[in-house]
Image 1 (cartoon, rainbow, N blue to C red):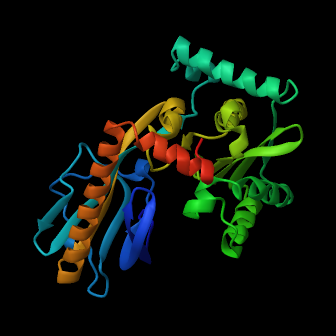
Image 2: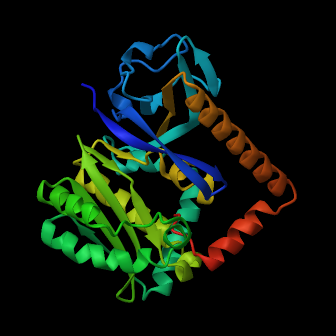
Length: 321
């Protein structure tokens, strides 16, 4: 069953994490979960007939692919564009906690235990975390999580923290009334220091927002919270999967890749009507992204990329993991 709707999609032109400007495309957007596709996308797949004349095109979010594909291709009357190809990491929750632990090397298990103990020692010899799922509980969670989010790099510099608009709040409360959301807070000496927000659909928890107090970074609050949540999910034995969603798995210390049991190669695939303006937008987007990547490689070669990121995140502390 297709999960699609016509939307105005932001087409962002970025250098690194800085957005230069944004165009908008009217697209038929397919948001099926990657597990719902019977077959991965291949070079032979063609969706030109599915583009309505009134639309700019079609967009598939997180469509499984079998291998990395050419980023830009002209196919008949359609521009095919892959701005993002990535591994989508997830945790299979159908097994036991003991089976899950076997995925970690002895070194990784030791590192995880050390981080948990370090946090506990700093916070009064305890791991104080709480789960929120009912409407009344979410009303408690939200203002506490916002206290954390307002201090993070993602919110202060990228406007990507836990949303504060009325629409998000209404949706959050509606999900709580249907038992379709889980939220978590980690405390240190009775103060919230990290949050995790996960909507639920068809037995799958979706990693949507995670943030922590920047001053706590050396005690790994994001990692600690993620771990206690995973432990609880295996104990609860109610869900099939924890989906880390799209996005890099190796950044921020490889948080997603570290905790995952599996991954699926996916892509965001645009099929755009072949017009001069769409062709211009795609080519410009690809050029800017390529330039951004080369700048990143250049800075990394001289050991500057991490230093610049760390400098920015000291000014606008991180909500990574």
